[in-house]
Image 1 (cartoon, rainbow, N blue to C red):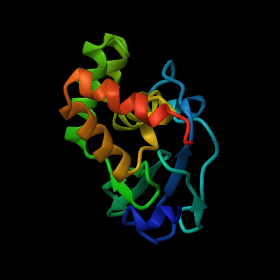
Image 2: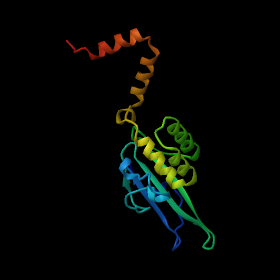
Image 3: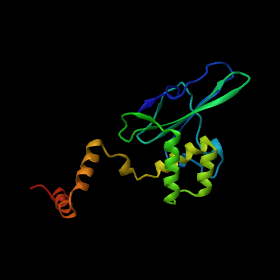
Length: 172
C-alpha cells in the first residue's frame, strides 16, 4: 500500500518545526536494547513523500507542534492491515494491552515492558517488534480464510478431522 506519512499525523509547516517518519518492516528495524526513539532503526522518511508498505508493516510518525516558545511532539503509529487493504492506527490502550499480553507470555522482559511504559517511541518499537514476531501465515489470512477457521473450530474433533482429510485428498 502506498501512503504518505503526513496523512497520518498533523504537521506544522512553519520553518524550524520538525516532522519525521520511519518505516518498520521487520524485527531488524527495531533495537530493543536502545532507548526511546533510538530503538527505531533505519533512515528517516520525508513526511510528505509517498512510501510503499507491505501488509503488516508499520509507520512511526512524529511532528513538532505548539508555539515557538512551548514546543511539543505529536506521535502516531500506524500499520498496514494483514490483507493490505487499509492502514490502521494503533492507540495507547492497544499498545498497553499488547505489552501486558507479551509480558505474561514471556515474549518480552519486565525491563522492556517498563521502557515501553516510559517512552512512547520505545512503545512503538516494542509494539512493532511483538506484532512482527507473529508467524507470517497468521498475518496473511483473508477474511474468507478466517471464516473457514471459525467454521472448523465449531466442528467436533472427529468432524474436523474428516473435513481436513477430505480437503487433503487428491481430486480424481
